[in-house]
Length: 185
Image (cartoon, rainbow, N blue to C red; front, side):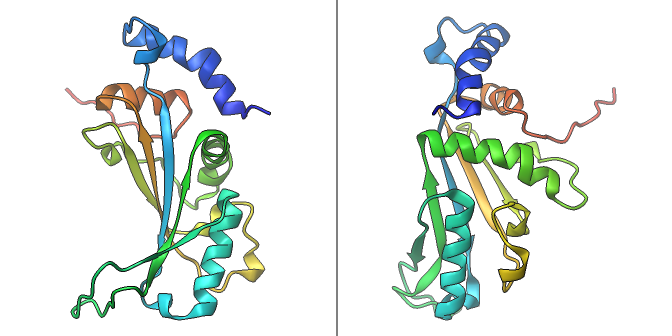
């Protein structure tokens, strides 16, 4: 079954972006390539039970098994050792990516307390968008009673757009809630 957001992208968003940016064909329109979710653990990485809880939570959120990342080298000031766990990450592609973004925009982000919108400054010059979430419990898949500690996570959306304008308009077409800045002249 095709995800709802992917179907909407293929039928409506491509045509809207072609008209808005006067692109010649549908292959010039930016598209989503992958979504990377990362949860750093800090000092809790040495505790096997907390590490396992983070892997389970991330797996529930994404619908895909999470991978434990490890430090690549030892740094004494940060008290890290090469090969010890650093965090948990998941890379989503294709249908799971569209399903996750649909749930993120329509269900999870509105559940954030005092949410005013996402900041546009998370766009880089290559057209990728990164932002952080302070509480992973905003996702409905997580059971509040089983959470031992509230953790933050970073979400990076990688797109094929060549500049900020086209990728920003793609995210706006997908109903990302950006902060509207008032222009005062």
